[in-house]
Image (cartoon, rainbow, N blue to C red):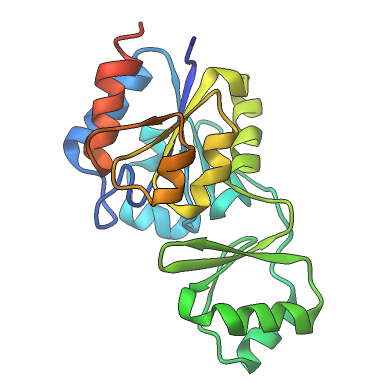
Length: 222
């Protein structure tokens, strides 16, 4: 497989406790040095991502934030919303149901204990939103958006075919990410459902699994 791009999840995959360990950052730098594009695909809101990963502009060719609802191209300094802004009726319904939430450009982010209340708020507001789970996190996304659709937009901007891309992830919301690429990889400590559907599972967990894949497969492939 001719790999021209590596798409990678953040929390639980390349980041540990919100930060990217130095050896993992060095492995990603080697990917870019090899001439391949590097795409970060995360459920995080962009402003929060910058707080925990201040070098994001230097590290990645493209960033898909908000679980596929926002595309950021560091080289151009431009953000491209891929979904609608949070609807006022939804925010009012969430407040009535006492759901604690944060707002992105498109997503509404909360926690899994609020799932039932968030579902009720979506129904009351009558808006086209879905619930996307990511371990303890919960996102209210516009229908039709996912990490996979966001990645496709990023690859199109980078002029890379999806069949020439590899994706690595660890959580429930990474299913669409892996499915959008020519090769889907799960780290060893990924949720069982993702490991079962991945085409390749690393021996090592988290960022160590990323380093393993980069050194033993991606860079060795030339």
